[in-house]
Structure formats: C-alpha cells, structure tokens
Image 1 (tube, one colour):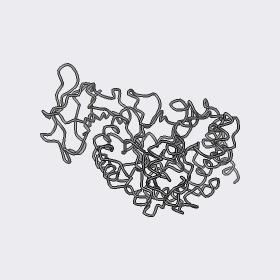
Image 2: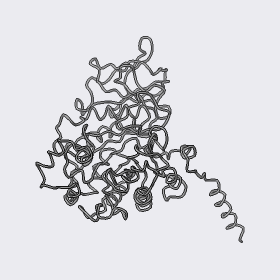
Image 3: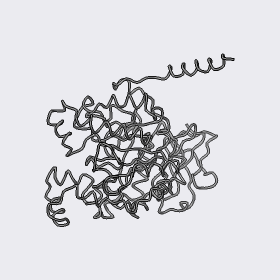
Image 4: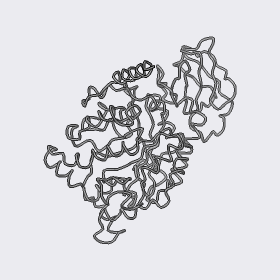
Length: 450
C-alpha cells in the first residue's frame, strides 16, 4: 500500500533535483531560457506615473532638471507657478489619483491589444506607488493618493487576463544613502541594503509580477547593486521563478549584454535581426514619458507612426512597449486613449500577423515599406503604403503552384502572378478595405511560398 506514495515522492524529488539552479553570476543567469509568454505577447503598454505628474512639465526628470542641474527654465517654471520656497516634496500631496479607475485602465489596455502592461512602481525620484516599508512618508499610501496603486492596477489587469510588469529604478537621485554610497565610489552599499533590495524583494513577494523592468542602473556595477544575487533568488526560489521575465538594466555596462531580454536603449532600433530577444520601448509623447500639460499635437506620434514602429519591431523579433503618461489625477487623456484604441483596431484586423509570430528569413523589402513575419509555414507581408495601381510587388517570397494569397480582414483570396525576375505580383482589391484611408498598414497571408 505504501509503494504508490513512495513512488510519487521519489518522482517529485527527482523532478525537483532536475530543475536547474542558477548561480549569482552572469554566465549562469544568462543561460536561463526566457519564459515563452513574453515572445508570444509582442505588444505591451508602458505607464509612467508619479509625483512628476504634478508639475507635468518638461519630463519625468523634472526634479533632476530643476534641482540637480538647476536649469533656468525649470527654476522659472516653479517660481511663476508655485509659492516661494516650494520643494519637490510639496508636490506629493497634489498627486491625488482622484480619478484613477484601474478597471477602466485595464479595459482600455485590453482594447489597445496589449498583452502586458508595465507600471512605474518607483522612478528615479524615489516615490513609490505602493506602501513600501522602506520609503516612509514618500509613498502613495502615506502621501498623495493614500492608495496602493501598484496593487489596484495589478488586480484589474489580472481580471482582464493581461500580464503585469513592474518598472523599478535602482537609484534615487537625491536619497542621502545613495549619495553617500556614490561619494564612496560605491564601496559602501547602505542604499542597496536598506532601500533598493528590500523594495525589489517586497514587490516580488507582494505582487508576484510577470515582468521586472529595471532601470537606473548606469552609475554603478553589479557588485554594488547585488543584481546577480537578486536574480539568482528570483530564478531559483521566488514565487514567480518559472514565469518572470526581466530586462537588461541591472548595472552599468549591462544593457544589451546581460539579463533576460534586451532593451539596449530607449527607443532602440537595431536595423537588423538581433540574435537575442529584445523590446522596443516608445512613447506616444515624443518628448516625454511622463504626462506634460503643455504638449502639442505635433509632438505626439500619430497612428501611422505607431503602426510602423510596431511592424518594424516585430519583424525584427522584438516586442513593442508603447508608453502613456497619466495625469496626477489618474486620467489617461483622450488623445492618448485615441492612439491606443487606433492601435487596437489595427490589431483586431491584423493581429494574426503580429501575435505569436516569428521573424521570417527576410525581414523587409528594400523599399522599406513591406515587412515580413511568419507563423509556421505561413508568411505575412505587411505593407505600409497602398500601391497606386493596386498591384503589390513582393520580391522576397518564392511562389509555388500551391501558393495562395489572402488579406487579413478581407474575404476571399487574391490573384497573383510570378513577377519578372523573382517574387510575385499581388492584385489587391480595387479600393483599400475599410477603414482605409485612415488605416496605415495591411497584412497579406502567404501560403505555399518559400
């Protein structure tokens, strides 16, 4: 009678013994396979929200430009709009989140086609959007909203089956502990031991994120940040060890070299197919990641630019993370909503060519207006400009007698013929399908091509 349970126990112990253990070094950590959900997801939304949303001017680096660099335009802005002797801490009570409706955000992001969302839990200003136990009186529970913003959004996103990522800055510009460590040449680690690492462990244990988007890495080595020790725990023993994804910003000289997937730089465009999984983070507001009350329409990405960035990114094997900055009240302003919803409408029609796709053997035509993805034997050609004669030339695919061509969102198959030289000529519908001309980009499904 005892044989069954003993066999089960032996099998369980054997499976546990077979699970890899990762050491606190890059050679071991970099060997960890990236959880498959991330590559399949392709599309995410980035949210930059914090005390910097109160002045809502310049960028999310407001505090640094104002009191770190003493820029005259920032000093003038504060002098003209706020009482004398105003300090950055005085902005915190005005960060109210009065109109923050996490389920409305989740619904918007879902309609935008996002498969994951990354929220700033703490930017370089140090204010935490949850009740961090090591950020007394400089967090969203003690000050401002008096709410756990990280937890509320996480619950809403998971109700909508959207993966949840947490952005976290390793450094804090003006934290005395960090400044003292910096003065020592990063030979002391008081800030890391008392602030950075306790917060990272707290975020993982409390919110069980699907992704950690680290930042603020550039001033100090991994030996100061204890990055490799944290990642070894994250991969070996944390509650999200099998599913969590991380980026590459864990120390100076880390970006594009170490970590889970690579960001390399903000708004990074590789130009060729990278050998490593990567993500392109971009922002609807081309001049800022945080909300700016004085932004102009010509400073925002239009729908065509967003679609073009998405298509190019996915063709090169990347994920696309598109940023919005909410107001201090927690409103995603209508122009940002419009851009997100336009992206979602495009994906409703063309998402088959994006989600769960892989790069094809050719990523783009020489014209730069046709981009390719693939899914098993099917190739997708995404073209960004509708040809005037309704005939699209594709030079890269090699057709066969079994080749069939169809357009996503358009019923039936399309006529094609071999092009002179190589490739094929596809006869498109006489007029672009609805909602053209507003829609920028169309996807063809090519079956039976090489």
